[in-house]
Image (tube, rainbow, N blue to C red; front, side, top):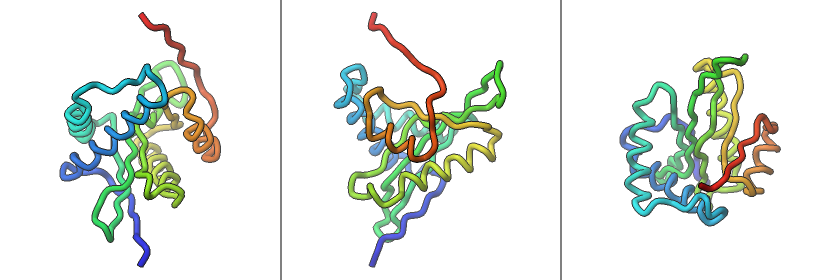
Amino acid sequence: MASRVAVRRAQERDVESVAGLIARLKALNGELDPHFLPAGDLEARAREYVAKSLGSDNAFILVAEDEQAGRIVGVIRVELVDRVFYKPRIKAVITDFYVHPAYRGKRIGRLLVEKAQEEAKARGAGLITAVYPEGNIIADSFYSRMGFRPLQKELYKPL
């Protein structure tokens, strides 16, 4: 029997599972670029981050749950940002996005982004962006296929 994956809002009971997936994402980012080296207490920080996000009016988390297995297999976190000087004024920013490797290639990522877009629009956002480490060609390809295009550039200089 094939697994059925449903997308829903994250709840307090999901904190451990969601934090685990976000910690995996941050560890992967560290492998892609040394400027994203994760903190030593990554798991604890991820739990705090998720719990704080669940209580925020300016962020939301959606999860993809394999209903047959009873486990969360994907997560997307979105922040709402007020672009005071621009129209549309509210921008939704995908800050964290991860699908468990065993569930990739099954359109779960696409479903998470589509549901995040719906939720963001319902909360007043007029556009959605995604942030991720430079050089992540998998993310580049995915977002490009989803219709995303460059909006702004962020440069850095180590201090």
